[in-house]
Image 1 (cartoon, rainbow, N blue to C red):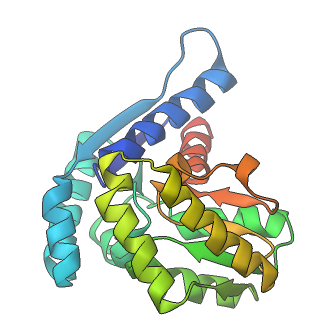
Image 2 (image 1 turned 120 degrees about the vertical axis):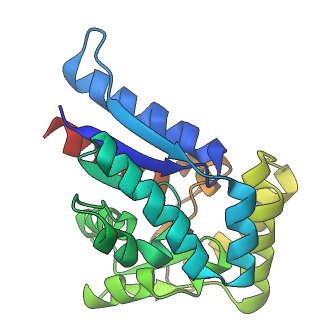
Length: 229
């Protein structure tokens, strides 16, 4: 079994789910008392959030690349950034290490293609929704990406940083998300990417009439498959 490197803490609430899902998948495959081999580097989320809001991606890149190199030196054989937003610098982190970085969008693309999704709504931080790392990869595959309007983007972004990232799961916030999802399903979205690893804490498949793509579950499952493969 290969060893997985996780860069987490962004936030630690979703990092817990990464750890749990990976171990569940490994144990389901191998049985008995089997569990995954994992190195975890948990960053200071407060520091990352401050730098993100400043747009200081160079400083974030330094923090994350140092963490990635430490995990690689410790013996990790693949790398995961346990947050969608951190994939803004995924290419730079991959260039800093000699082991594969499992990119969350590549994993999501496989799931979208399996369900023949041609148009999908993306929910996440404003840096994810307005960024290029989802849009470019989906466009290359001919998948139409829908994102909320500017007011909705700010509303979603605020709930992620001020509520979900702090473990606050409020019914009123869930209603906001469901109204946005309903709106864009009406505009042609055949699925919803929960493109922030905290959103699956709030929104479940049972809440939606179209398929949801839980990036935490998909990403962590891909890491387990790598380790077992």
